[in-house]
Length: 101
Image 1 (cartoon, rainbow, N blue to C red):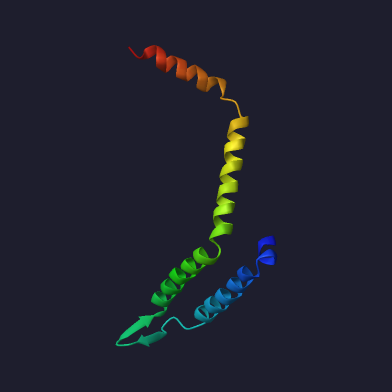
Image 2 (image 1 turned 45 degrees about the horizontal axis):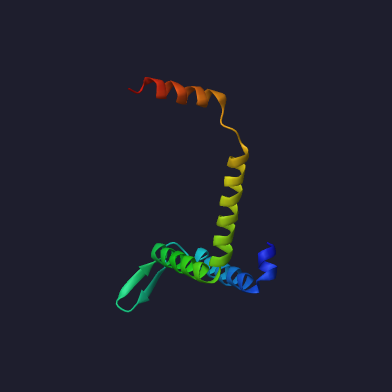
């Protein structure tokens, strides 16, 4: 939420794609659009809009996405580093090492 205030282009992306998805979702299921000689169904338009949406978001918001993933990974690794190995796991490892010739 803070990122939308700091980076207004993300707010524009949300508004534009929300409008496009709303426009497509409110159309009847039997809608067809003619593109050249081909007819596209509503399902095909939804798939095309989803692909376009993902591409545009990755182009304009990749820094925010990758920064969030990186921070999450860092916190997971820090959490794992502060945890100790359970004693029953240590016993199991020593038993497995004793069995190997």
